[in-house]
Each structure stands twice: as structure tokens, then as C-alpha cells.
Image: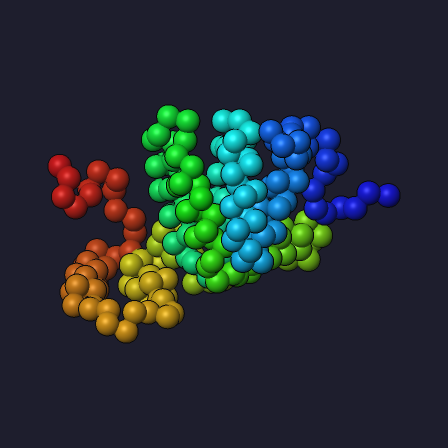
Length: 209
């Protein structure tokens, strides 16, 4: 009986049928690349990347697809801006005809030397598995039913209810300056006192004729 989770049969991966100039299957190279980055083994990770880079233009782009994944799956919150940096390096790589190998090398070194955190990957897989098994489902708390939703409007909720509930944040920046918020709240309070909480007409948008 086949397992329910994880990758499919290797024949579903076209790169299992492609070999590098030195005869190494590309799916093996991908596995080496990712495992060595996870273990911070920079030199062998870079060698695996170079073997992919020299195989073909398609495999070189597959290298970048894998680096994008690794930046989230294996490095994650260890380098929160990692995906952005990989995207920039990929763009620079593509800006050179045939690809700029140094950009790929730097991307591999960046990820391999970064602190590792796989919790986004684990969380994503956990959610997908638990929902599929019927063991978890998103909750819709009452405070989600605000002025921006049908349910909230049908309950007669306006912006003051939203300021009291929907606009609440945790882990707020300690230096947040709320001078504009306080004035906005007063404007909205007067509006609802004078006009109620019914939705405004779509044509009555502030700043538009």
C-alpha cells in the first residue's frame, strides 16, 4: 500500500532522467544541494550547484527554483529576507547572457552559511495534513465580523467597533506614533454619532468626485 504523504514516484520527476556532464543524475544533484545547505557544508553545496549550472540552461533555472524553496523551507526565519535576496541574485544572474555563475555561487553560500529554521515548512505541511484529515479548520472569531464583512454590516457594526476590536494588534512596535489614529477615531466617532453605521454609498468616497 503506498504512503499518503511525501513525493511521488521518481518517474514523475523529469530531472531523474537527466544527467550532468559528469554523469550525475540531476535529481541527485538537487538532493546534494539541499542536504548540504541544510548542514552548512558550503563547498560541496557550491560544487553541486556548479554541476547543475553547467548541465543546461533549463537545469540552471531549476537550480534557482530550488534555491528559492530552500530560502523558505530550510533557512526560513533564520534569514527572513533570504527570499528577497535570492530573487535579486536570480535577476542579476539572468541579466548576463548564459547566466552569471558568481550570482548562483553567492546565493548558495548565503543560504548555507545562514542560521537554519525549518518551522515554516513544518507548519505548512502540518496544516495541509491536519485539514486533509479533518482534524483542523480555521476558526472565525466574532471580532472578524467587522465593518469590512457582510456579517459585520448585517450586525450593524461600524468603524468604532472596528477600532475597538478589529484594529487591535499584538507585538506592536514600542515606538509607534498614534497621533493620526486618535484624530481618525474622533472623526469616525462623530460620523457614526451623526449618521449611524449603515454602509456609505459607493459613490460617496472621500477625495473622489
